[in-house]
Every structure is written in structure tokens, then in C-alpha cells.
Image (cartoon, rainbow, N blue to C red; front, top):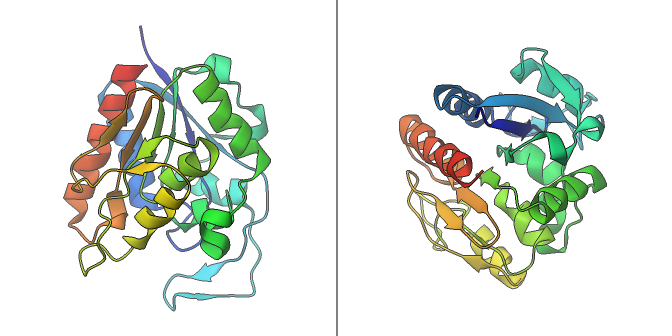
Length: 224
């Protein structure tokens, strides 16, 4: 039976939306593994818009759903229309949009809030015992919403290879377990059916990130 997976995006572009390469990798691996997927995003304004050349915020205003449609090639639905009962699993790629548009992690860290549609969706899949796949920064959503869960964002020791390792400490402060993993590995929290991989939390060649996301997708489908 073909598995059906909901993929949630948070905009378009690493600094203010979904990380495009991670999102594309999720789509490719789902397709390769014979799964169907439907893309969703919340119909809300972005926290801000970043000029990706300068790395600085601009005065523009953009909508998360409209921007996410760029990655989804226009085939996208409003997150409010997602029904847990219609899917076998959910996957949320990373990118700063997770920490800026889906939550306030970028400004408040462990004290952040998560937007209601995302909270309802993640808790809905968890309650239905359906797998949740998260990569890059998106595991913080599970850490915030599902106390006691286990995730990875790569390493807990900051260095050139792991520039965002401080995130692991914040996850632990939320009462969750962080498990160190390499970029091509995943951590599977079997009890909660959460599969995580670090992706661009690691300063690593893009093919290794692609492979790690493939392992995440494979594990999510196996659990579903």
C-alpha cells in the first residue's frame, strides 16, 4: 500500500523560510521510496524577509504559504486543511522559517511559542501514533511540544563543523534527550515515533546532508 506523507514548509530560503535543498531532498527521497506526498504551509506573514545575498533583513513583506509554493511548484495547500486521518506520517524540513515563522525559537529559544496550527498538527500525529520526521532545526518543535522525547540536531559540542551545537543544550533544558549523531545518521525515538537528522546544522558537503535526509525519510516510512 502506498504511504501518504504530509510535508510542511515554512517559506522559501534558509534565512527566513524552508531550506530549499532539504525540502527538495525530502521530496526526492519520498518519490524514490514510492510514497505520495502533499505539501502544506501556514497562510501567515513571515516574521521578516532576509536578503539572501547580504544576509540582512529587508523592508519587504512576504507570505509563508505563497513563498512555500515556490518550492512546491505551486502544488500546495493551506495548513489549516491538513487532516491527520488522511496521512501516514508528517515531515518538516528545516531552515530558519521553522524558528521564525512556525515558532519564535529564533528570538526566544527554549522559551519560544509554537504557532497553533503547527502545535495542533504535531500533537495530532503524535496522538495518532503516526511517525514525525524532522531535520535541521525542526526537531526543536518536538522538543517544545512533546516533553521527554528524544531527538538529534547533530552534536552538542560547538566547533567549525557544528556551528549550532548550542541548540542541543536548549533541547535538554526542555526536558528532552539529545543524542549526538553524524550528518548521515538519524536518531529514532521508537516510543514517540520521531525520526530526526541534523542536515545543515552540520557544516558538511551537501551530498552527505542529502544522504542523511534519505535515511530519515526511509525510517519514517518504515515506522508508518
